[in-house]
Image 1 (tube, rainbow, N blue to C red):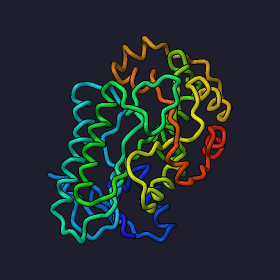
Image 2: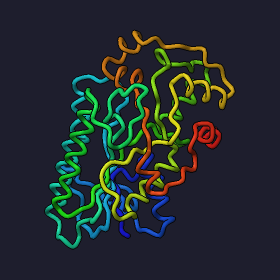
Image 3: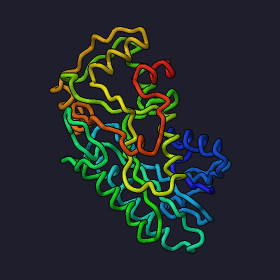
Image 4: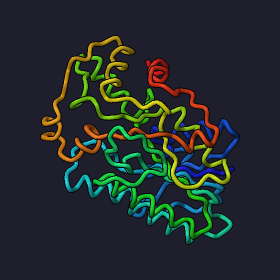
Length: 293
């Protein structure tokens, strides 16, 4: 297959591209920056991907959620996900029908479920409340418009992705390495996570598997609480984790981001991934951390 990937030079995009090539597929990498082996997106309209024949398009690009959620940051998060995807699908409608991808795989997040507490949530669970659930719902609705163009649409509700070369792990490793690791707030909030190897394999499997449509929880089958994540990471790095950040301090420093990303959580269940027959290379956190450390 010829698979186009936006965000192909990013953390997840690099791994997904590698797995796809291992499966014998050809990758058409789209990038905002001109580099060898990529098709450059127009700077003034990055959604206007250069037209070429594609069997599938994997859309991974988007503004990072990390940072202080100011009004401007929230605007960038919304426009880079919801508005961009809406414009991208509209642009694909201008392509010749024979060039349009048959499959559109679009990133989303388990933030869709909001703070679900200790209740396990699979892909049938309702949307939560808050900024992230609003973003994820708008993002997914924009992606689903590709169905009107005859595309099979898959939505990647991704949890925290762990890998050596990107995502949260390098920062966590530095923080814990200097003895500043510790639980956040009560530590009772659930953390869903996935190793980047499983993330990449699932993305390619979603492209290849006819009949798979709608959301997929991109999460390992064994989520943990923040306190347990802290304990296991400290043990893997052989470092203490006595530092505790109170909830009020996080709210004071990070505003809305604190409650939605650090103090709240989701206990996501990867029901669809397991129904697809995916065997997780790293089903539990101890296995994932061993591979990373």
